[in-house]
Image 1 (spheres, rainbow, N blue to C red):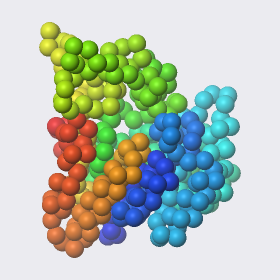
Image 2: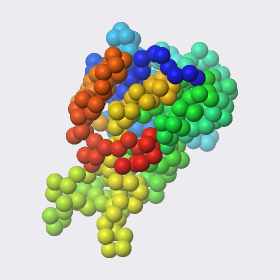
Image 3: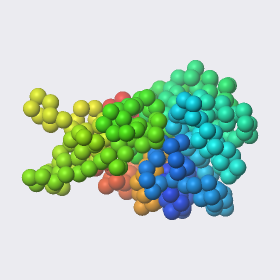
Length: 334
């Protein structure tokens, strides 16, 4: 696909109806949300929508000129696929603009039962080659692919030139360093993992214990980090935990850090990216309002030939651990 001449589509998270409204009012072109069950990868208590709320959200979003995408992006359980099929039925009947899915069975069901339902391939499918993307497009009619967060801008460019679907790329929010859709690390310390039960490090397994002037973060039965008063800390997940190695505390996989690729919007558009995506359905309406407004202004500036740099400072205090990275886009995580 040739470089897009269209304006970049801004896709923002909506973990609740108030968050959805904040995203659209902040300048998002599209919002993505999930149903209140295990079919989506942000299955946290208090988040997501039921069927009636989804239908109302679709109507409101369309009235405002936006689009609503429904994430059905966990992997269905063997012998128990009914919940995922019902989610697809709910999506189609509610009039969503697209379903974001990863599971082959879910995609097959949606494509065969609801042939007019637009399908986007979730990042959870980790499709990062022309051959993989072509398979999903030809087999299930997928119209857009959300890229895994492991590709450089140069690799994204080569990929978009070789496929004939829309490409969506993450530009802001929490950064998972594992291969999307392949991580079960959380399930070793707590019940469930994001690709099966829709939640990494479930809140009911997280505890913070104060002792001797320090705060210890625990996941299940495991102490996974310890912080001094006022020290920046992220949400306790095993992949961003700190352990004592050679008598020194160090992060084993990656330190808490957030992706911010605002200064790469022009390069991503030249690479052929259609839409840019913000992560954070669990973060709340204040978060999405600020991020949507910042990226709306940056995208508008890009289209007008102005620099986007001034808007990046609007988000510095929202980053996990108060640190930002360009991720794999420059092949240097920090």
